[in-house]
Each structure stands twice: as C-alpha cells, then as structure tokens.
Image (cartoon, rainbow, N blue to C red; front, side):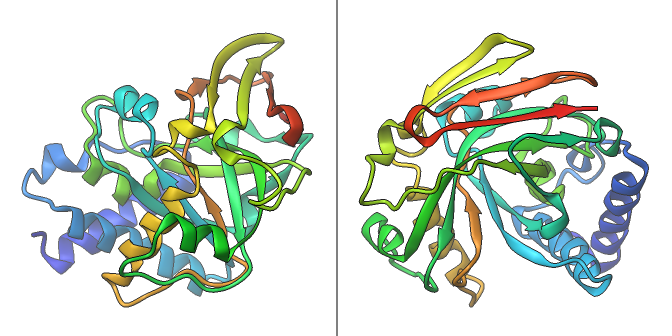
Length: 261
C-alpha cells in the first residue's frame, strides 16, 4: 500500500490536472504496488477537499458495469466515484468543451433514491424499492490520467473518470417500465454511433445500485435519500470534439441531447 504522503501527493496532482484540464502519467506505472484501497483513499482526499471548498455532493456514479465498457477499457470489475452539483446539466445544454481534459460520452440510466439504501446483503429488489424514479442520462467522461494501459486503480483514483452528466426530463418509476429493455441510440452530428439496451448493465441497470450499497457497507456508509445514482453505461464510450452535437434516443423515456462549445 502507498504511504499517506504518496496518497496526498497523487490527490493533489489530480486536483491540479482538473484545474488545468490536463493529464498526468499513470499512477500504476509510477507506483506498481498501489492497491484499490489506495485508489479510493486518493479519491476520498480529492472529494473532501472539494467539499471543504463549498461544492455540494449530489450523488454517485458507477462505472464499468457492462461487458461493452469492460471490453472497451480492459477493466473487469465495477468502480464508483462522486458527483457534484455543478457537474449536472439538463438536456439541451451547451457544455464548455475546454473545461475537460478529454471528452467521451456514455449512455446510461440514473436513479434518484426516495429512501436510504444500506448493505451488506442488498438485493435488486431492495434497490428497486428504494428508487423514486429513473431518468435517462448521458455521462461525460473526463480522464486526468493517460488512457493507455490504465488499470482500475488509475480510474478509481481519478474519480472513476467522471466529468459531468446530462439528465433527461422524462421520469419513470421502476413499476412503470421494464427498465431492462430501455434502449439507447446514440448519435453524433446526426450519425448513429452506438446502440444498446439497459439490460447490458449487470442484467438490470438497478443491479449496480444494490452493488454500490453493499460496497458502501464495507466502509460503514450507506446511500442516502435524494442521491442520484448514475448506474453505468450500456454502450461503449463515444469520443466527441468541440462543436459536436450529441443526441440519444431512449424511446419512451425521451431524448437527451447536448452540444459541446
């Protein structure tokens, strides 16, 4: 495991990369013995400094929950990060491209909890009972660590590569729709680039919510009422560039779109 000094140093490197919209060399290339516990410690220091600076935590993102994403990254287990209020955009937004180090888009469902959810043996049914509603979302990935050769230690340290999310305006309760079959047709500048269905996320997109509750239990924590849980992508990430218009059609759950300026 890394020393407290090394963990603090890496957290500050990533914070500076966030401010400068730059990338740093892979942590695992420099610290090959770094563990997953180290990476969550790094993320935690970064999170706490942001909270101390006045940012408001609104939820959590879960990543690497689908075979498509695992194959795209070469990483085979889920991870999670935090989301702050100033990273949430409504559909139709214009988003400043230069605020990110790099931009890729993922197709996801987000869930808002109506009651707390705690492990250690939380099930899919428990998660569905705690969810107020689902809403379609696009996640903006933003990596501050060089992409080539990344491991899960690198991605977790970098707040699971979370940059922002764009939320749709159609909200549906879990009993109103079979969430497994929500489709996503992702387009860039009018051309369809990726398609998928939400069952690609662990068989059911809310399974990740139960996974996260059980993961939090290991640290003596729980998911709280009102939190937004971004459940993981059911398509591969799509690269976008300045000026691109992004649109995703979720059929009965509506359309989510944004433009990078």
